[in-house]
Length: 164
Image 1 (spheres, rainbow, N blue to C red):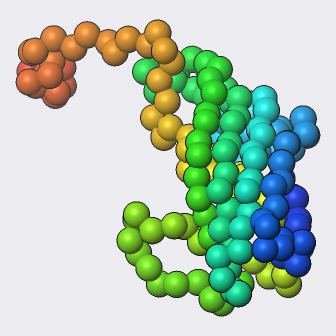
Image 2 (cartoon, rainbow, N blue to C red):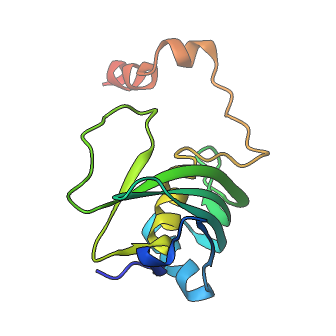
């Protein structure tokens, strides 16, 4: 499977001084990411990576992601534009060397194969993690639910039952 945003980089390029890499999605890649993320639109995605050797077997990547997206409001069901921004750290490890650490506070690991990192896929995964699962437009107002409706969610069904 080829990722929607593919930016391979050889691990050998990352020396003791580290390496800065900038990833920017094209218009076509943004459209493919929107489909993957089930979003109406991804307008732009940029991610700056600072890669550093962590050990002989792993690398740390400190990233700053900024994406312009269109999401659907869970309140009004209308589309709205917004900015997703996230700073993150991930550890790249050789496939098969991943830890079994389930601690949510530990650094996430991304496996790589054949000495090549895919920074595009890493950026796409970080976008997916940074998206609000219940997006609300800035001006969205929750509908007013009276106390009677809130107390009796099946009141309307009860009234129908009494008619028959």
